[in-house]
Image (cartoon, rainbow, N blue to C red):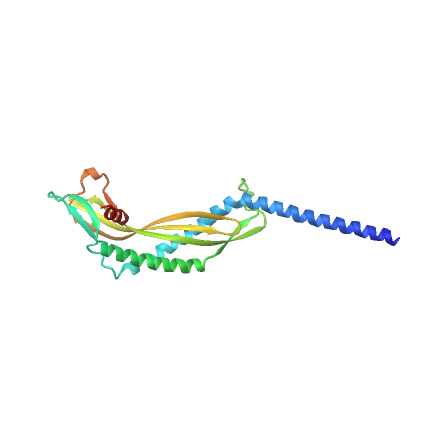
Length: 230
């Protein structure tokens, strides 16, 4: 009788172990399949959230307060012909480098602080990867942590367009390219945000010749490259 009982117990333990193993295996394969299928949705939501975060940050930090102590007058060097037409435009390199150094250093510091404190969690319904809108909000919530890492590039750009009868409007922008990488246990993706900030504008005497179409555009990177090749 004792042997029979022991055999029954062994069989019961074996069955329990098999059932537990099956549950673990099925759970693993289900989660693996689910995470792979939901990954595009996670990337989409994460990119939306990061874009909102960075764009709000840039609009709040690149402002008059950042540039109020800089002399933006005479930042551009305008070249005209005898008829007063605007043929070319250059940047005053000393002032340009000063502006970019201040903006880049300030933004790099602030972005580093932002990223050090801005891991966030995506809250997604279990069926959020469903093709059917009615089902995409159903199921228990799944939380995915996302960390942001970025690289900042800045540039100065001027646009000169005809304004009125014999005038031209000169606008100076700081252009910002923010390349960022999203890191989480299940995703790794890269994207970029391009953001332009108008820092100065001025009415000039003269016209932009029609051969330039909509107007003259020049950025500091082009000027530096031309200087290095000459």
